[in-house]
Length: 474
Image (cartoon, rainbow, N blue to C red; front, top):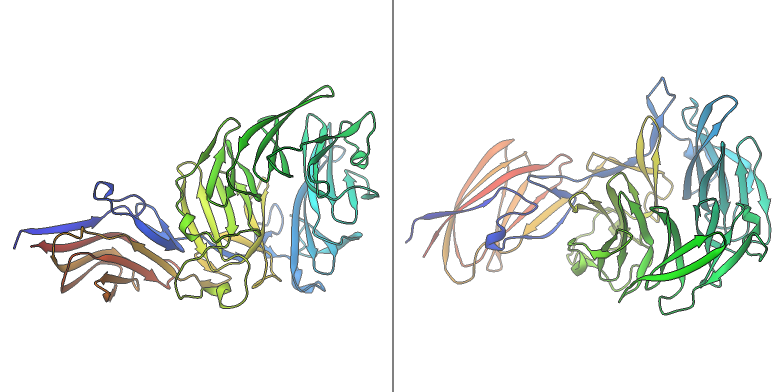
């Protein structure tokens, strides 16, 4: 028998790379230097007033709706009073739009000017001179709301799927025909769909496919297509279009989001970043979890984090929270673009995401497809879903080579209480649970060639700092 050896896991994000030991799968854990609890979801709450920062829920339960189908945030500055109002719009399954003025001291949601839409409206907030405005457009109508004026309706506008503003020119993608980009140079949204001296369209009929999303990034205009990215150059009514990127697989355009100094998006084979010049595939390894189709993905960004809601196949026999019933999405991938570390929150069926940033707070708001669809949620540091602790899981790749027989004898763990460690070997396993916070030690005898380590916990604040596995090699 040879001398005693050890396998040490001191960094759960990137450990023992020279020995080719890696994380095989995880969820509801955040693999960093330590193995920590992931983010979670709670009911959205907002400060009562600027002076009273006690957070309160909106009065959604008092509305005659069964589900929250959409949410929009915008702010308006009033030059006369030099006052800024932060407004949150909720679209319910009764087709009505409800408004709450944040920091007003009231959680009440009021029906906004008797507005109704046939589907969740697409919105665009913009500013010209000292005037803040918002456009709300859906399958049946367009509403424009300027500071100090009541919203007004515009008829005979095509169904708009996305909008952006660049140098006081409004650009729109439309549902049909989806190869056209409409623009209005004088900011008159009512001109979208009409050819006038101030408005018109650009046809993009090429191998990149339909136009799905348009946005302004670094003062340039980009159109995300089914299979690529186009760039629009607009200078004094002179329009040119160039192809920037051709994708081998379909782009899920609802995942396109500006995050810091890049645009993030997902295709059928992975997650990508675009800096305005080059598209780069990230090292985020979820490809083996992706199903054949992910048509109901959604994404948004806040600060340096990219939040991606999607469906993943975890390939196990477990049903976590929303997975116990019918669901569309079941995971939220949160990526920190500063180092492209990421976490996977499993068990939530997110429909849409909305970042809200004020002088006092910033939050990522969520709506849901199935379970919890009557709630407006927010991302929180607490690793739970509406006060239900998220089950946490992490498993390593093989911790040793398959050439030599080894005698494993001891497992030393620095972890919180009630964390379960499972050693998997030769279709067998042996489990231990930590009995205190801090150092826990377990002795045993396992004779095998290869072994994996599985870590799980149902605690909200589970944490593992390091793991040492003693063995002798024959």
